[in-house]
Length: 175
Image (spheres, rainbow, N blue to C red):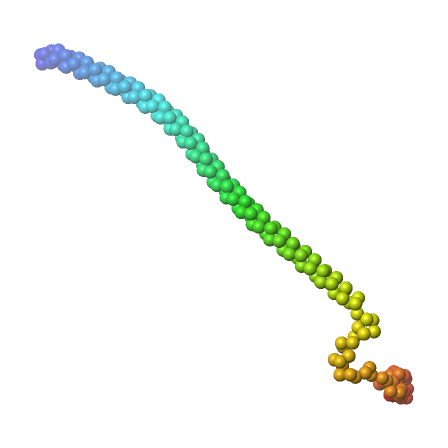
């Protein structure tokens, strides 16, 4: 028992020392857990803040992209409108030139018709100068001096036909 009595205070001091160390380690672990929880909470807040910032930036970028695309579309549309306006102007110029050519052609046609009428009127004036009976005097020599053909008697009124037995039984053919 002596060893127990000598060992008891030693065991007791060792036990107290271990309990003290264990309590200190428990405090250290609790402190670490608390700091880890605080860090996790801070990280969670930072994560939420970062997500908010990312979403805000994405919204800004989307707005910027939409504005850029709208600007490009307006530019392309204005280029198309400008090109179509130029085409319309070119076509109007061509139409104007063709109208001028048509007007010139119509004037030329009117002048030609006027000259034709003048020639016809002059010809009519000369036609009035001719004698009614001698109007064909220049045609006579062209006919080699022959006269108009004269019919010589005979039965020329009878028609020549061929009957196709349409008269019934025993019909005859008359020629």
